[in-house]
Image (cartoon, rainbow, N blue to C red):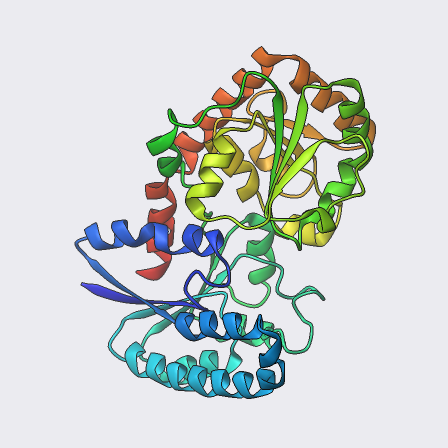
Amino acid sequence: MRSVLVILECGTELYGATAVVRAFQYTGLFAQHPQIRATFVSRRSPRYHRLCSRLKSRWWSRPLGSVLAKIENSVTQGRERAIVAQSRRHDCVYMLRIPSIRLHRALWREQRAKVVMDLNDGLWLPFSQRPGGGFENFHEMLQSSHAVACENEYLLAYARKYNTNAHLVPDAPQVEEFDKVRGQFMPSGDRVILGWIGSPSTADNLHVIFEPLEELFAQNPRLHLRILGATAANLPRFEKVRYSCKASYTNPEMIQEALQMHVGLFPLYRTEDAQVRGTLKARIYMSAAIAAACQNWGELPRLIQHGVNGVLAGSADDWLEKLRGLVENQAQRQELARQGLETIRSQFTRQMCFDRLLSVLMA
């Protein structure tokens, strides 16, 4: 039996549903596997993180900010030393977005366990390379890993410039979790819900379809835009668009919300950052059996067959045309949704993605 130490940054405290997608959804499959044993640890203390978050929200605690930071750094260093010691009893360590070159170097020096780095974002881009972000030594991390698991083809091509042992391991969009509650949450028949799922840092992409949405909503009073993961402050200055926001969400809440949408929106700027992001958002929409409307850019044309399992749009006029068609043609929406769900069932089940991950961890 091979043992794997799965290292998270801070449980689900920092990355929320993303941490569930990339690690915890596989706990059952790890437990059932006869040849592998997985142990999950966090580099930072989730309990201390929650405590600090509560304290920092109190006005009287502001002078304690630097003291709390020093204490947390000391706690984290102790946890890192414990992780290194724990790694000696494992065959492999799987690092999920860990912004610590100190821990990475310590694990690499041990040479006891195979070090697998998970790459699911453009950590070489300026946004991730800001001082204090923890990935200033990103390329060293790539080079000092025995293997790299990459979420999409673009990341794979980049990683292989620095580490030839890089492999494609797509994220599972959790269609099994959607199936458990699929009949309990249904789209409303009174209006058409356009949905977007993301975070404050990605909400700026909605500016790509700002004008198409304004025109579409001005023409159709039955439309509503549902935003998950951002607030009004993160959005374009809508005038005609009727919208509501849920600033934060749990994984079950995301699933319930997606199941009540009619169309899932995935606009992007034509940038390298957009290419890096991959297709998980689209695959979540497809798992919810809603029509995926996506930017014709980056990794998305690899997943979306236009007019078959979703639609691709480029210019503002193109977006307006495609969205108008989806809004006005219920039969088209339903067929795209059906084909999209079939794509997920045939290519991106949890077991399929887990098997790809295991092939890297156990090699």
